[in-house]
Length: 167
Length: 374
Image (cartoon, rainbow over all chains, first blue to last red; front, side):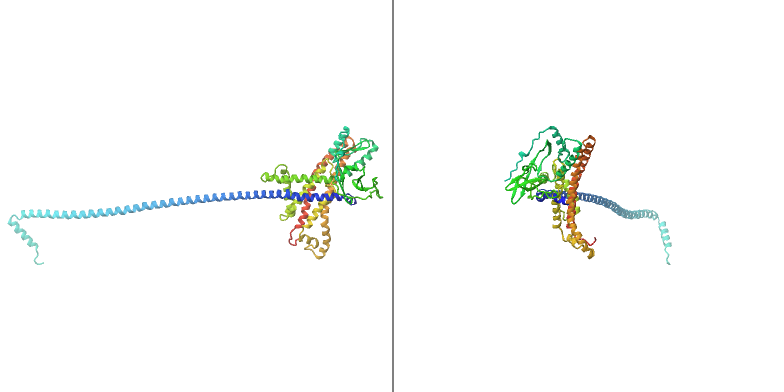
């Protein structure tokens, strides 16, 4: 201990303290502060760049997900549109068929009616014709049968016989 | 007033070749030069040992002058690369002169009406003849003026401070020129700054408070490290192995710790929470003592480690001259080489430990109050 104290130089201690304290303040102003702030800024920069990259990645993922979702939606929409179209087409076809059926039935009905009426007309005219023909035949027959008196009498006889007076 | 005269102090460097070679190798290997006599006669062994011992002792101390090496030429001791350093004394007024005036302790310097003599690395006031009086234990009893000289250690610290200033300012400036990326030598030092911040300051002090201690921690770390490394160069400098230096550094840690301490810190010293009253009273002096022991351990640790490193290294180099044969001397050389490498590690390690423990003490000082879970 005595040796230590004997070695202790007060002058050296004063100089050393002066130099170190001055050095601390000088370096603090000219070196440590700018160095540490630059390092901090750089670290901050790296951190924010990493964050930004992460964000961009996230965003891209979101975009991708969005895209996929939109694609899916589009596909679904197309699907539904197609389905609708198919249904519509089917309906149109069905409707058309129905229409056609109805129309054809109507046509048939009309045709049938026309035929019926034509038939009636034809029957009527045929009847008339037949009646005419009958009358003509009857006329001719009558003319021929009634050409003798005997025959006329016979007919009268016969007709009279048919008439039931009692009835 | 100031008359630094360096030119006359630089001795001629072109002396006998063998002396030069001898000096050269010594300079290379040792942190300074062993002025070993050429004679290896057995009866001189004791004196060689003493000489080496004295030399190591001399090296470990601060010095008022600087030289690369010395050798003996006949009876005269010659110095290589001698530079006189400014002597600044306070003796009822400022006294300034170059240390070369002392002629290595042989001459008495007169300034005003004071006579000064350099004796065993210390400056004493003497009479005109330079008489040194001794007490019984052979200690000089002359009056000592207040010595504020720019010694070898002071000069080394100034140079280190300048080096650090320009080094780290250039790093700070390189950021501006290089879009926030370090350029040049700063690329080497920036990770170390980050290490001090991320592995010394933040874990010990905490995210919230570390900022205000960073200037001290960084400065002290690099200051100690650079000075430790300089101590390993052949310039013969032992700054961090000087008790005054480590005392000054630890004092700053001590002051910073206690001046920035919060209520919680003082509560833990004077009235430890969470223990019975009797324990509080017992703990108080212990904790109070701890306040001083902590920085004291810092100053002793750094001092002792650097001192010991220098002693071991120089002793091993001294052994080469004591063995003076190819086997022993080369073995000593290998050992000295190995120790040098370990010392390189120790240089960084001691700087780390000093900084780490300082940060730990700062951490105690600003620790936030937490629940009574002790």
